[in-house]
Length: 309
Image (cartoon, rainbow, N blue to C red):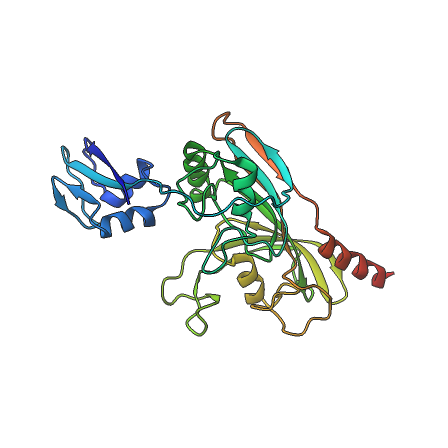
């Protein structure tokens, strides 16, 4: 793989770790990517390899070997997209359920990325790598709703920074089992990889758990079910699904965290990203978008409303 060389001179007086400093310099959008570069020996200070915890000193010369973008081998596919908004910097899409966001493992077609490559052609940021061009954040395969996609590296870095600082508005609609005791509340419980099942996440204080906060509000109550709006304060893997199951109200249709036997007919978790808001990377104006419930979830609501009459 081709690499490009980049050099920086640290001129600060304050104490700061090199991994944090390079993240702030927006070399890559995440600290973990910087750490990977350091682990690969791609970052040197004064011509010597360092650890991520190295404390920079005034006058230190930082040399980086950054991998060049390699030719993308994922094929564009003419898959219809529900475009909510688009300009030269970004695209907001309403992802359907059952669509995977990006290729992974043996799956290299039928994904949102395949569709975006056809729709946007060469206009997608390269920061996410050759497998995830333009992808700033993700939704689970069987979660529907709004996502923002970056069309250039500047937009990608800016949106990633907003997400990291919890400045992006993310609200979801979901139908859960049972009747929640409170009309609103906050679930503040750390999430990490389950120690019993590596395919699952769990509320845990063991291992590498991370802070996770979900706000919820009851929108409507039915017999045995509740329609809830969940707002993410943090963005952990499967966060809403894990948190609602943790408080005893798993999402309808969630085979991983919920009931195996379902009383309602839906073949995926009833979870939909219905509001997404952020500051535009260039105009700096706050933008907010909404997407109505998809047909399968709306049919569940209609059925429950009919049973109430």
